[in-house]
Image (cartoon, rainbow, N blue to C red; front, side, top):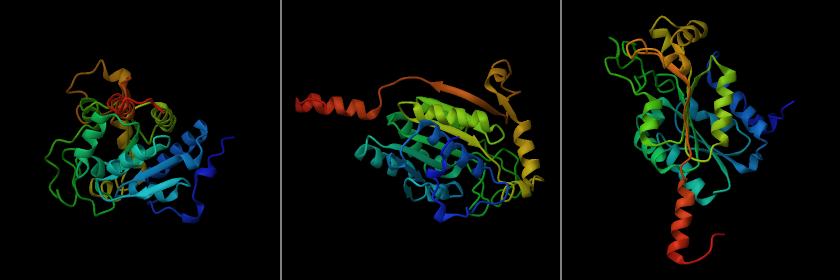
Length: 273
């Protein structure tokens, strides 16, 4: 029996998410991964930005930091540089990570500091009123696109790959076992990791698009999910608007701290500590 309850800050309960929201499933997967890896809560720093997913840091019985919009990765970078022995886990929503925080996302991937980013993609600015986000599917109605979204959406995985992240995976809340597996692998990885998890917002996205309850929206996600092994044999047109799930990148590259340490030792003529 995994002892994951020591990672829960019970005094801050109940949680604020809408009934049926997938964030609770993600929360359970992360504390389970902590327990499986037997990480000491004192050695974990959980950082989050603004939005529904930004509330996650409140409920972890670890070191926690709830930051400003789009800046979770910048705060996390400071934590990791000053406390390199800590496990730094970051939660960002699709708007938080890819819109106002997009530049930080790109350069965190490039830098390859040993930080674990979980992007919770519910395709909408859920907490702030249901505005269109960088991942809102084309054609979907939001408060700021009342006639349907005309913009192409960001592909989080392709962006992370191109920017240089050394571990990249995508899963959905419909696949909890696979989701736990990639989260655990990302936590074990040495380098910057990005795990995108597609979740549902049936309140501020679904109800405007005939998916106003959790089950219809989860069914919609399921119907548009394609495993990577199957996607390799499909055309670009067949994969349009689909969520390809699986592990996309798992490679080694020296992380930023090791490179920085080598540089300092070389310049200072000293020994590594």
